[in-house]
Image 1: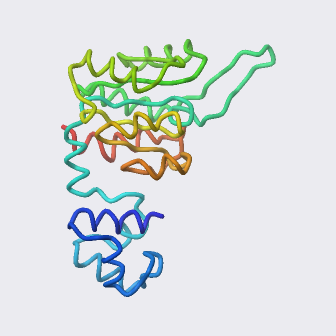
Image 2: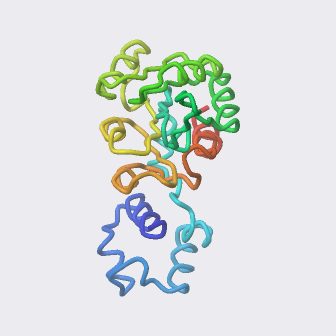
Image 3: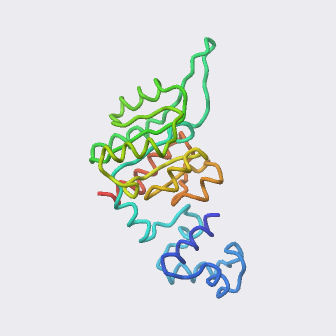
Amino acid sequence: MNLERNIKAICEENGIEFISFLSEMGVDRAIDLTVRDLDAIARKYNLDLSELIFRNSLITQSLLKKIKKIKLVVLDVDGVMTDGGMYFSESGDQFKKFNTKDGMGILELIKKGMQVAIISSGFKSDLVHKRSEMLGIQYCSVNRSPKLERLLSICEDLKINFENVAMIGDDINDLEIIRNVGFSSCPKDAVNSVKREVDIVLETKGGYGCIRELIDTYILPFSF
């Protein structure tokens, strides 16, 4: 999946039809390219061979243009800020496990002046609100109303457009935002329907530092 995604990114960046590209290489699928073919492609487009083969998503110029416009980063909770698990005590109290590396990355992002929002469809809003307050996240919305409507309200408050928004989500209820924002990403263990839609599939699973990866690899280096 990584190789095909990266070959498609090269084609898009250079105005080449993906099918035509494969045809010229004498193959029907990206996976059929030989090591010699891949080495030649990497050399031609000034790429590292290992990046071409293994990196989840190449950072193309078109992707950089999207990232440079970002003014708001939107986070889902379950499966992104957490591992998606549901933890209960014997008395029935629910707990969530948040990643400290994600938290440090969010703090650094806010310190740089980036707006951050949590938009979740979960039920335990008190836990999420406490986490958002701890990190200084200005916008925290946890309810069952459509996520895109809630994002629109935040954008109106900040006087920004959807193209100025980055979203990280992992499941089908995030797709309405993913399909409308300027830059989208998902954890490594997101559902396939989300992986097919996003700009970046991260190398880290939800709850294990995927937000930190997004911030350190894509947002901080290119948005400021």
